[in-house]
Image (cartoon, rainbow over all chains, first blue to last red; front, side):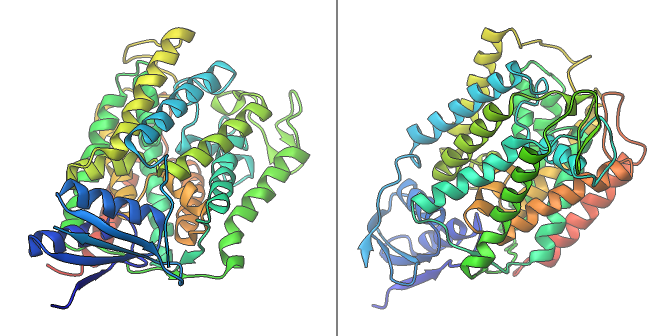
Length: 73
Length: 364
């Protein structure tokens, strides 16, 4: 199954959390990746995921300066 | 690919500590000379800076506040130190400039930014309760737009030089403040204006003001401290993280005021405040909605601009121009009450915000 990717790069607060939350609610469970371009959004998405009972299984800085979070439930 | 380092300030304990430090420092700044119940208000101090460089001629609110310069430069230093200086921009720049203008105009009808809402409460000013209600109402309106898909579009990465422009402007302003020191009894020193009476004439020593600003800028950049965001995240996500910082600010500013004899509960005769409850509410509603649509309170916009976010930098410049317009056009309130055109400012400001809000919703 292809992994769902939420592209929140370049979006300001609270868009990254809104988009990621929407996707988590829609999926209910499973795995999805969230792309963000700044540390504040990275922290916010991680915090929102944990609050929803999801786990942040990967949180990596990519070579292009963006971050990829992988969320699982 | 490398795993990112944990940011210790971006924890519940971290942001609570940062809010507490801001609260104590605000009380101390007031103790050492800053205006009462204002201490470190971003809107008031932006207005004072606009006056100091002659953008408006309200003689009582002119002083180039080092705290604000420190906010940007402290955040800039933190962003460099932690490799978070990432120039970006291009997300509806002129709209963000306009949001900054309207936010400032609304804040000056109330007489304070969200930080000052809490600082006024911590000093015992009951009128700020109406400001707080307005702020919450404005941010709540903003969350309705977010639920409808409000979005100002994506920003793009910008060059290092573009990201440096705003911090360099701030360095330039700091240079002016250092070159043209205030002269006792003189309303002008070189190119800068200095209030001889009124709130602008009250200020803590330069070194303390600047150090406080730099320290708060550094800590706030690390913790993402944001007063508007605290309310927004609670309404939108039931997320308490930012609110811990705001509550800590309120409690510690209150305690500091108690210790220093700066707590004077009441409604009438409060420092740099008026008692028109409806306009305290409405002014802050307009400001709160503008901050929500722009994605951050004025303090947060300054910290973001220090990280190279040029959209936030434009919002901050909008704050300055908004302050100038507010005083030149008689939109700003004073302790005597709202300005001659304050009502028009609130009505037109709200209309423009609704236009921006509805026209940027990507889905219905």
